[in-house]
Structures are given as C-alpha cells and as structure tokens.
Length: 260
Image 1 (tube, rainbow, N blue to C red):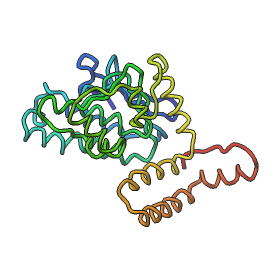
Image 2 (cartoon, rainbow, N blue to C red):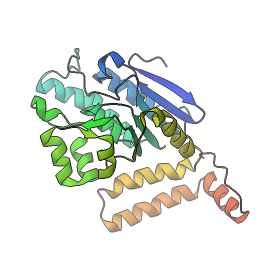
Image 3 (cartoon, rainbow, N blue to C red):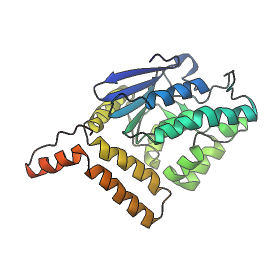
Image 4 (cartoon, rainbow, N blue to C red):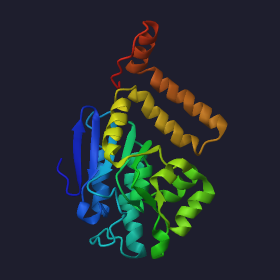
C-alpha cells in the first residue's frame, strides 16, 4: 500500500515503519496517525515492528499547521482529532500481537513522545530527547501520556515532565527507566533492527501474550493477574512454538520458532 506521510519497509520478519515528513521534523497530523494505524494493523505476517523517523527527528508532535476535517486547531478540533485519529493509533499499537521497538533518532515531543514510549523496547540516540511540551502552549498531555508516564516513571517524574515541559535527554530517560537504553547515534538503527530481528526469531505467540499481560497487569489486582497469566499460558501452550520449545529442550538444541 502507498502512503503519503510514512514509509513501510520489510526486512525479513521485521516490519519497519518510518515517519517520513523530515521537512516538518516528522510532525504528525491526523492523516499520519491514521496511516500509522493502518500500517501496524497490516503486519503481513511480520513478527516484529520497528518505528523510527526520517531525518533529524523522531516526531515533533502533532502538526499545529494541520488543516481539514480533523484539524487540531481549537478545543473541539483537538477532541475530534484525538478520538478519530490519535487515540485509535495508540490503541492499535497497544493491541499488536507482536513486539514493537522504537528507534528514537531525535526529538520525540507531544504525541511523538507517546508513540515512542508505546513500544516494548525504546532505544534512543544519545542526542535524542523526550518532551511533553503541552504546558508551553496552554494544553494538556494527550496520546495516552498521562496514563503512560505515571506508570513508567512514577507520579513525581511524570508531573515534572508534564507541568514543567522540559526536555528529558536520552541518558536521563534511561536512568529514569523511561526507556530501554540510550546508544550512540551512529549505532541506533543497527541496534534497533538487531533487537527486532532477535524478537522476530522468538516465540512470537508467547511474546504477544506477554505484552498483553504486562499491559493488563498495570490495572489488575493480583488475583486477576494470576488468572490472566493462566489464560495466556493456555494460549501460548497450544502454539506450535511451545511444542517446538519443549522438544528442543529435551533434545538439548536451540529451538527454531516460527511464530505459530
């Protein structure tokens, strides 16, 4: 499928999605959010996803210059854009049955920060930063940021990011536990693809269940989490990969997983 604002590439079992508006620092208007949602919902058999940005930014946030039926201008327009474009994207990312890696190659601001942090593994270039800039223009965080940040780094640091609107550099983000790790700029794309390739070669039925269980555990009580794990183990245990894993263990060899 052809897209206007993103580029989709396939490398083996890894689907790579590139935000492709470098002249706007990959600012994300509603149509980009819709294209992203379509791309992640059309895996085509891919067993892992990498999302990154073209040029010197990951995503500078929603495009304040956007126009059209889903323009973000004004409170009503923002509500419409969020409920019809950005929120469906974030839900699509959360519901993917395969692991997601983001390679944050530069600024990740506003909804761009939310997209970056929605991954299972966030790898950032050392020159990259994360920014909740809404307070600087009299708005509030969206794209799931208020839910996500409090769970990733706790109330105090989430409040710092949202109410002070200051940049959080990649190394600080790593030290906070906001991201998986910071790497040298030149190594970013190779590191992200290597990790995604490793994940894609794993038991992706089980990995998909894991990412859903982790998300549910953020809301569930202990007893509910135990039941969710049992249900997930049932699903994973019925997979071909589980059969292969058990057989490989008994035969003392490395398992060859197929994602089925």
